[in-house]
Amino acid sequence: MTTTKLSNKNLLLILIALLSISLGLWLSQQTGHQKQPPTGLAATFLIKGKPLTPFHLLDQDRKTFNLARLKGKWSFMFFGYTNCPDVCPISMKVMQGVWHKLPPALLKKSQMVFVSVDPGRDTPEILKSYVQYFHPDFLGVTGDPDQIDILTRQIGILYGFEDPEPGSKNYTVNHSAQIILIDPEGDMRAVFSPPHDAEKIAASFQKIIAFVEQT
Image 1 (cartoon, rainbow, N blue to C red):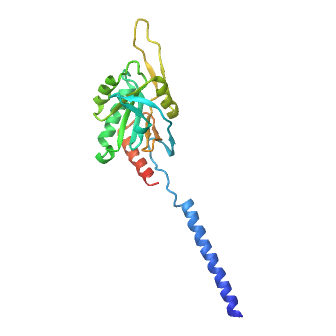
Image 2 (tube, rainbow, N blue to C red; image 1 turned 135 degrees about the vertical axis):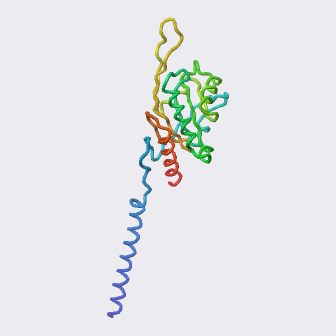
Image 3 (spheres, rainbow, N blue to C red; image 1 turned 90 degrees about the horizontal axis):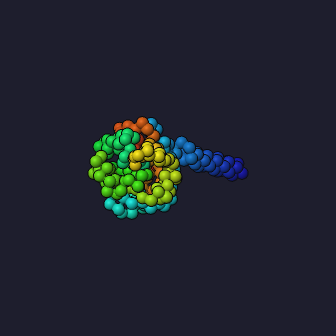
């Protein structure tokens, strides 16, 4: 009789212990073992990413540039125009520096896309000459204003045209200066705000990739 009571008690203790271990494992998976986002980034990082909706533009070779062209690669995107006197060439120079700092294996799965918000002046041919001045692998893209707006609005890029001075056909385009990072799924992942630094962007980019590929 005593033996039976002890056995039942021991069985209860074993069950409690097993439940405690199971609960502990579950809690560790939900809290302590959850992968933390990278720190020390020179960017605003979107942990889950923001999916982009379809758009239709043309690249520097007059080929379709759409959401499918953003998938399968990490894409840096900058929005501006080739007649920009300062922000655009400075930003493109920074990205030139980023490309020089990234390892070849990473460059193979990355692309730099300059999107002109000034299609009236920036033809594909002009864009090609402009972006390849900074790097032969950089890509120039533009298109109809309504399609440009579909992309800029969901990413949060702002731009606007100033009236030309009397007697002149030249005009200025005010635009955001952020560099946008899109992941291989076509989701917006990070925003690099000015002032930009090539070394910091390259280092942050590699941290972001390490985090995304391990989650």
